[in-house]
Image 1 (cartoon, helix red, strand yellow):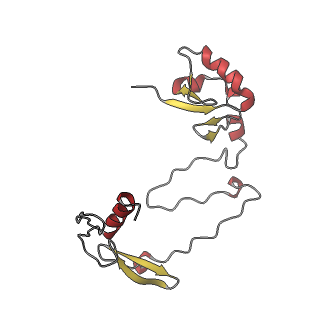
Image 2 (image 1 turned 180 degrees about the vertical axis):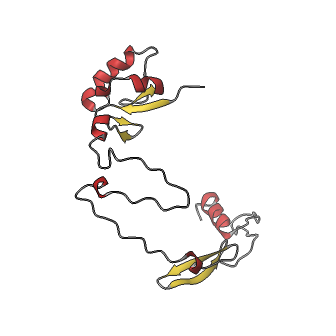
Image 3 (image 1 turned 120 degrees about the vertical axis):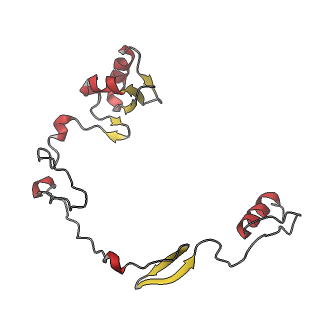
Length: 172
């Protein structure tokens, strides 16, 4: 089984230092593109942190442990959610001073939700469900459909026939 690889795009100013570190490894750390390296997971945990400052790791900005300690909510005890129970409230110190709280969600009770028959979908307007539209071909036409430009007459839908016309008979 091949090793798990972590894609690292070092900061532009550290690219050369990162490359020097990469070729010094045994086996060498390979490149994925001009600016991205594929680092095996065991080597990633042992690499110098200074090479990761400002880097993108698997598409996400690298956050050093020192920087993580300064983030809002750092140092708060971790809490685990219990399925079916609401999450505990988040302490105010977990939010940045300039954050704006979201309004509480305005959900209707689930009992008030409309029910549908199999194969139907509701179009919802401002005052609730307005129209039920059956899924599938809404034109009411039933196949088979024939091409009027050749002898094919086995299309199951009008859309299939129209696609055939555009592709097989573009001159018409």
